[in-house]
Amino acid sequence: MSLTGIKASKKIKVRILITICFILLSLIFILPVWAYPKILVSADDSLFHIPRLISLQNALTHGHLLPGYDFNTFGNVGSAINIFYPYVTTALPLVLIHLVVHNWIPAFLIFLFLTTLATLEIAYHWCKKLLQSDVGAFVFSVVYTYAMYRIASAYMRLDLGEYMAAMILPIIFVSLELLLQKHDVQQWYWLMLGMSFLIYTHLLSVLLVIGLILIRLLISLPMINKTVMMALIKAAGATLLISTYQVISLLEQYHYQPLRSVGTSALERILKTPAQMLKFSVNNNVYVYTIGTVGVIALVIILSQLTKLQVNGIDLGPMAFLGILTFYLTTDLFPWKQLNHTPFAIIQYPYRFNFFATFFILFVAAAILAKGNQKSSTLLMINALTITMLLFVRSANGIIHKSWRQNVPFVSLEHKVEINDFKNFTTTDYRPVTTEPYDNDINHHIAVIGQQRKPVMVTSTADHYAVNLTTTSKNQSVDLPIINYRGNQVFAGQKKIPTTISPRGTLQMTLKQAGNHRLLIGYQPTKKRIFASVISVIASITLISNPYFTKYGLKVPRQHGKKSEI
Image (tube, rainbow, N blue to C red; front, side):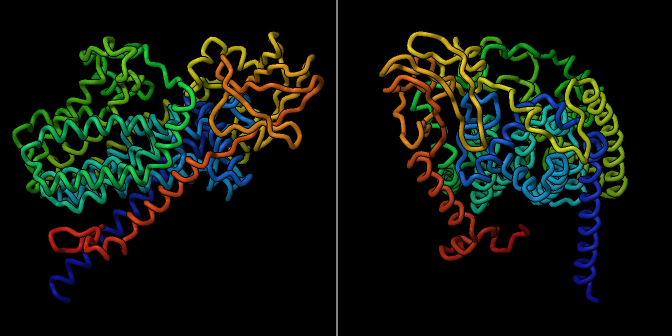
């Protein structure tokens, strides 16, 4: 066998070993939930995400491909969470798995396993693409996938959005670095894919990523020539086309009537001092959102090597700067209190910046370690694995301890999560502004019939609400305790009833006849939303498919005239 053949054979064997290791690591990651399924229903956001999953499944199984009202969930008040919160890459995969296995616990286990494996593979591939180092790529993929913030997103919070966003960050920021530093203009394709995925995952992360990209572009402003600028514009334009459905779904509701978003008045509520952040990080305390023990070690490595951030012809200085900047933004050194009630307050909690600090700090530190330990690469990888597993045991212990303290229904692998355990949870996210003084009445199903407040019975099936009420006179105004979103439909028998927006932001109508009425409330997506979904599907197929790029001489991926590994 030739020398080239021996090297190729060795690379294949190494890659197989790494893949086996990643599969084992993915299995280890789901062990806490496998042993204690109660973790899923005791997480901070489980009362939000589990009803959301059930709502989406209700819509899909009844032929509604574009979800609207949350029937049989969220207190039956007309919430429409899956219109406002992206579901394509978060809730939809879980629902599809559940439709196969018919049990939410195994569905979550399969979902967590597959997404952890994908995160390991993506982190490894993109780190190696930038650094050309198997060692650095392996170390980064392991410590990043098992980072404190990702563990907290999965188990302490069950935040599906940020959890899935972690999977795609390496594609976004590595493709950006290759575009800026190597002038590899074909990276616009991967930047587009990463940002499009993110838009269908977690909108708040999209805003924060855009902010970080703008800062990164300012750092390298002199390096941005016309070719690079055109690649950036191309990526932005293609991303907007693919994300048309998500954007239009939001905008048409905001245009219909003013909506509340999320709380924007307590940015400083759970801020920590730098000393406290470092303390909780070193302790690897899973109850506090930090960069974790490994993050602190990585930060020390970076600070001690600030003059040696050139790896494989890539200047890691900008990434190190973004890592330190985002860590700084998690502390009270930044005057967050002054940003309350401003557009910046939409982030709600500055601890979210730990998400990005974790990525940048671990990436740069892994690159530095790989560069300086080429002769002891095996030892470095073993050390990374050992430290990661030891810290995960501590984190898992904290997660399990929390689950047993929570007063939630017990679940096991055989027990199916019952809808009755979750359907009465309510949320005020994205309710109309005018509903705020009436939230309690709406939550308790208080209608306004004529001038009188009256409780009504609101029942629900998987695809409509039903309200029984009585009017005492002809042409009487009725204000139902159901939020009025564009796309609502109200029927009395086979007759469609015109609706208006009540002073409470709910469904208001005039019933011409006095007497008993049974009203059915459903949702039908508007033509605009349907058209937007068609645009997104066509754009996705057209832009992502390789034949399109080949036809126009833009083979993707391709780099420096050689076929890429991607």
